[in-house]
Image 1 (cartoon, one colour):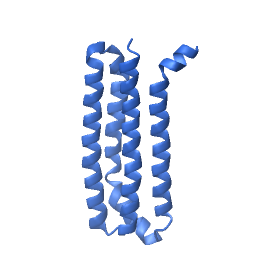
Image 2: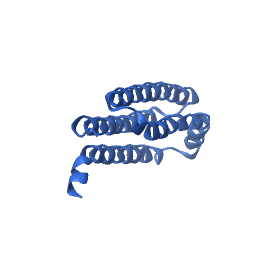
Image 3: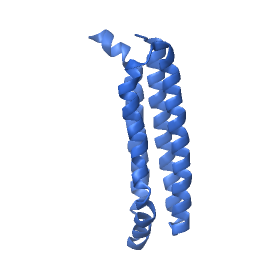
Image 4: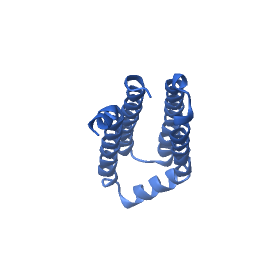
Amino acid sequence: MFSEVNENLYALVGILGFVFAVFAGRFVLGKAGRLLSPDENGILFRVTASLRVYGFIPVGLIILVFFALPKVPFEYKLKAQATTGVLLAAYFVFIHILTVSKMRQGGVPETYLRSYNRSRVFWYAGFVILFAGMAAQLFWHPR
């Protein structure tokens, strides 16, 4: 049993790092949201409502990779994971730029935008930690 835990340690650290980073980002954003007036909250909701559907794209990609990666031959797993990471990173950058520009156009206060950017830094760092843990798992404990 201990050997299984030891073999999965890198992936576990990646997952825990990701979860911690997401919670830290949510904390920063929640704190900023409490400083908005009801009118500003309404503006924020109206501006970002149309973008929410795009949040399902990375979830679908991650689920697809989760089920497909075990079937990929070992020599291609690291490349498949790296490709997935690059695609997700490009998607996140695109959506971040789109979201911030829509919030600016909608009149969301700059203080909230700064907090939003800070929360995204935590979130993106969490993804880097997650993918690094998964890559380390493949590199040091191939099956």
